[in-house]
Amino acid sequence: MTRLKFSTFLYASILLFCFPHSLHAQVGYSLNTLSDGNGNPILTKKAAAGEGAYLFNRNYLNGLLYLEGNEKPISGNKFKLNLQQSKLYYIDANGEELEVATAIRRVTFPGAGEGGVDVVFEKGFPSIDKLNGDNFYQVLVQGKALLLQDTKFADVEYKEYNSAVTTRRTDKLVSYYGVLGNRISKLNKADDLLLLLTDKTRQVSEFMKQENSKLKKAADLEKIFRYYNSLQDS
Image 1 (cartoon, rainbow, N blue to C red):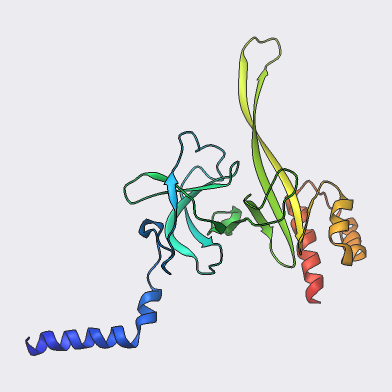
Image 2 (cartoon, rainbow, N blue to C red; image 1 turned 90 degrees about the horizontal axis):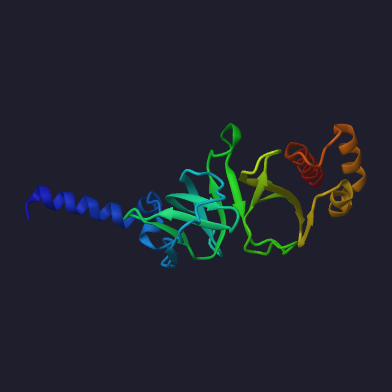
């Protein structure tokens, strides 16, 4: 081995020995490797035909995937989220659309929201209505009290007035839920909200009157939950 080659080899060996974690941290783990980077396999299966409907976004978006029991996100892949069935799809290295079958806790789409905010979907919440712990909710507000949005779709057939032609449309159904500790509540009316945030009922009630809050509006609900969470820090 020449002196130049030996010097290059020695320098590379020193880098690997002294800075293994720094070099390792620069690698973005990908689902295409079928591993979460810690030796845990990621299970996938072929996406069934016709399961591309009811999506959060029709395009594949950059996403950070968090598996159950693992705080380190898997990056470097693009995903589609089926809100109707809480299924997550991605394209593998061969261009085939697959469904992630390993248990997922959260997926974040950086910059995918209005104004470039991150959009977070999470599961594992208590069962309510016909929704169980495997349902993906969009997390609108995080903190001691969480505000969640569930989105489903209903296919409806109808006829226009004085028309024999049947038309098919898809209605978007949005519901809001609040979570505090191990309690979850659907937010249909003011009493639902006040019963959930019972430790700050007076303050929240006054805030709602002051803001003329409408529980059917996501923006108003977000203000209420952020206000409640601010009370915990004061």
